[in-house]
Image (cartoon, rainbow, N blue to C red; front, top):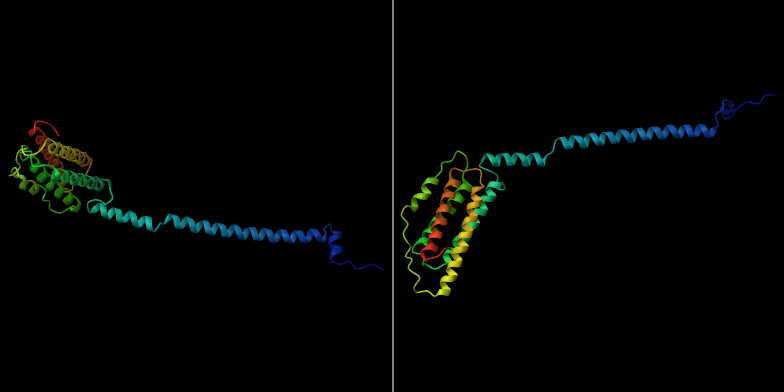
Length: 219
């Protein structure tokens, strides 16, 4: 009597073992899993690429920078940094000249007054915006009649005191020349205030040099 063959015997009769069948099933599951992982990975890559193509904050920062430049320049751009540096150097020169003795026949006084107006012009350059009226020309009108400020001669001071005063004037001259160099690098005139500042710094430097010459030397 012929024995009925079961599923396993039938597979074996076709050359397929149960081990091979089980491996085949596992292999199919593995392929399905890999396909799913690949699909998820492609989706995540697409999301990241889309996010990079449409940045949020950087674009906003760019727009803000553009708006600031339309107003006359962003506060942190190269021109404004140079103006800030020039203003600090003019302030340093003013402090040095204020500490010096009033012995330079009015040249120290005139240098300080011109430098004071220079600082006003630099501050106006910061505030100026395209389309606004400029008062740059008026700034120099106040310097038309500068006296000597009551400065006398050096006879009542000791050589040591005069020497310290001359050193202060030298320090002021160095600061003014540094400010002059910084203003020369500014590429926007900002309503004419930068040009005015350059002219005024040159005038201050001239007065400081004359101050040294008034004592028979050069600061």
